Image 1 (cartoon, rainbow, N blue to C red):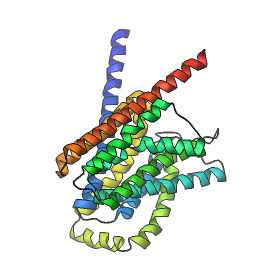
Image 2: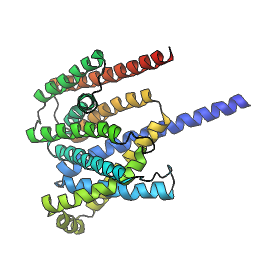
Image 3: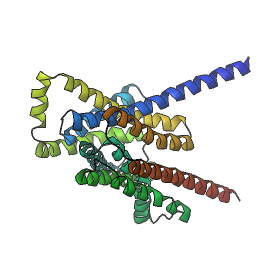
Image 4: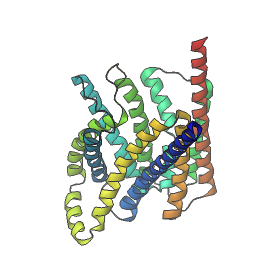
Length: 323
């Protein structure tokens, strides 16, 4: 009886994890494709305003999820210095998301994902510059194909756009910088925040940063969305769904991290980019070349090797600490 019950519980947990991973993939890839559709195909040329919509949804839904639904215990800000550190992270976060959305206006999703896969390179670079953290030489060697693959993919990309490429690289670097900065700024004992609580505080700050930026740089966005909304109400549905999915992507990322191992998350994360590339090509029919595919494949293989090298180094350090 106990064996059958254990089997049932394991089966139930397996089904739950599989559904969670499916939602994670769907929300992440869905928001990416919908961003591309809105900014490039639909003609909604307001990436800052779109990012502000995402952050507004994240602010409202984070509050509901934590305060009312109690998905995670609420963590309070404990000091003024912690608040200013969160503000700093919010500004960097805004830069990374806005840059990524701007790049989608000019670049196909497939190439955007290829460039985004170089995040480990920038993470290692910023980790060394900011914390003097040195990795094993093999780990650094794995970054060579990561960068080389993007260089090759750039040369073989039929839809290459210099400004879009610069914004995509900038967004990737900002994302890596935020990751390292978060480890530095929120590492004090008693001041760590889980990703959902961090989003709860970062999202309203991000809205406060993006609102004046949108009013100055995309002044006609508000009048456009009101006027076009009366003619085509589908735009309202797209914006609400897109913004909700943006929060869903963050929530699913937190839950998948909680319910799977670090290795599983690493493998799933690498595969997610490849799945997004394939789906985007099928949906948008953007032209691809053999050189571009070869470059992206090289980058992904480098990322996989980099993650495996990091994992082995951590295992070696753990074994050494027990000796």
